[in-house]
Image (cartoon, rainbow, N blue to C red; front, side, top):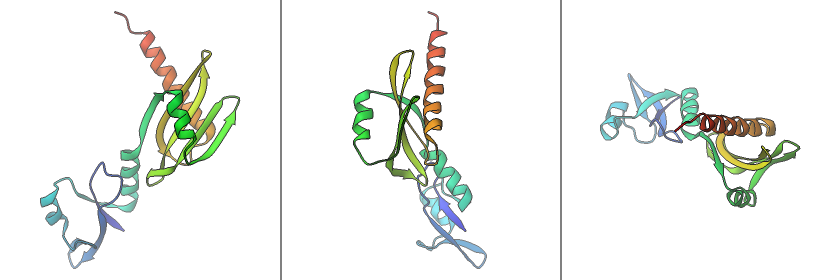
Length: 149
């Protein structure tokens, strides 16, 4: 199955139906060329390619957040909460797009509590969430230590 899709979007525009020698939107009845008059970015992709593009658009890199922000989200609708000697992680129950969720991590680095968030696939494990947060913070700290004025 193919879909019309606008790159960077979190969802497809509409499914495509073959009408003779033309591909038409199942909802609008318009061809790709007709839709591109309204938005030149519209493309036709196979569903697998749409899922890959939607995931890429919805992902968000690791960002350090405050404890109060972490606690605020922890009191919302969460799933897969896990505590271990490595730290705490959970995911927001609301999906951003496809199978992309917002992940949260709390860990201790250099005797300092660190809180972080990022978006990625919902299948990430507790250890993967903490590892991603730890690696990003360590990389950031190392990069900042190497800056000389």
